Image (tube, rainbow, N blue to C red; front, top):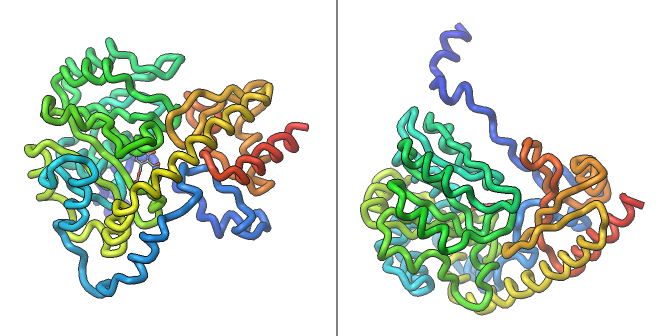
Amino acid sequence: MMSVLSGLIRPEIADLEAYTPIVPLEVLADRLGLPVAQIVKLDANENPYGPAPAALAALQATATYHIYPDPEQTALRKALADYTGRSAEEILCGAGADELIDLVLRLIISPGDAIIDCPPTFGMYRFDAGICGGRVISIPRRADFSLDLPAIARAAAQGAKAIFLTSPNNPTGNPLPRSELLQILELPLLVVVDEAYIEFAEPEHAPVGASDLLDRYPNLAILRTFSKWAGLAGLRVGYGLFPRWLSEQLWKIKQPYNVSVAAQAAAVASLAVADELRARVQAIVAERERLFQHLNTFPFLTPFPSVANFILCRVEGRDARELKLALERRGVLVRHYQTPLLNGYIRISVGTPAQTDALIAMLAEVTR
Ligand SMILES: Cc1ncc(COP(=O)(O)O)c(C=O)c1O
């Protein structure tokens, strides 16, 4: 009976490695025997300042939680059109940028189709492609984390349908140079630029990123999120800027109520106080530079320059995972990856000045 039942599972899913989710904060605090408030959480690139007060007020003032959300996300898309300078028709919102990655892949990938990713990079492209039965052509970055353009062109010529480019890249923190993006846009595939961290690279104004190229390149799509700059990771809301041929089809397959009433209200309220949120982004950017200087003083760490809200560090002369676990026992969470490319690295999110101080004190303690 069991073999009959397990035979019901699509083979590409049965063969898929499960995604490793993060351990919830409360569970981890319990395990470590520490109060949640004492945990210094620098492992998921969240915003240490939380949502804008105006977003919290909007959540409290909203009276329609018993009604399904607006499937067309009308108010949010209008506010985003003002914010991005693009037309509302090009904008589609998702339950985080994650949902948009999933939707784009479900739209274009049939079993056996290929996408390109450029590791080390965000893991969701590979994961969601796998759910669709897609193949991932991995074109590893060079030692300085720049892209291998000739290899990308070769993979595109072999028929890959899309490439996912992260700018700034997670976890390496480097931006995608405009000249390289322009070369890739000439290739015959869909180019998805994931700008989850773009506000930290352009902290002075509403971000432009690659959006000024949308009119020239119909194969360009851009993904963004409220999780990082606007501190709404827990509400799950992101958006994409899509060419019409793509957005028309995405609208067909998106779940009607994909962005909750709460998420839409908080996102609209956040955009109304974008200046205030930008001031926080600027504080995080300033803190990033201070954190970088501190990390540089530890002989076993090599931090890489970053234009995002995290810093990748190579760990030399000691085990990176051991270092992560030693920090964790002291209530400081940083990210370590069990992948061959990143085994010897940790990624540290930029927190408040007090969180930086706690991290640095613990780094000194564990390595004394
Ligand atoms: C590059 C990148 N894209 C997308 C996401 C997911 O964003 P969201 O919270 O909007 O789903 C993340 C989250 O860490 C990310 O690093």
